[in-house]
Length: 60
Image (cartoon, rainbow, N blue to C red):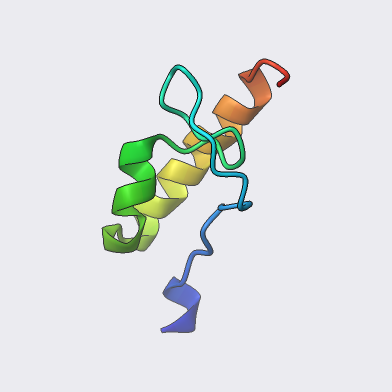
């Protein structure tokens, strides 16, 4: 069962930007609220999206 766990990318910098994306973990507010309901594959997809958003984010 533990192999199914995917850690939350939360960095405790919980500030949403004008695009509704957290400046700490790069999840959208919808992704943040739904994280605990997602399966492993869905969480992995969210992490890929976060990674892409983080690479293209404007510096704060």
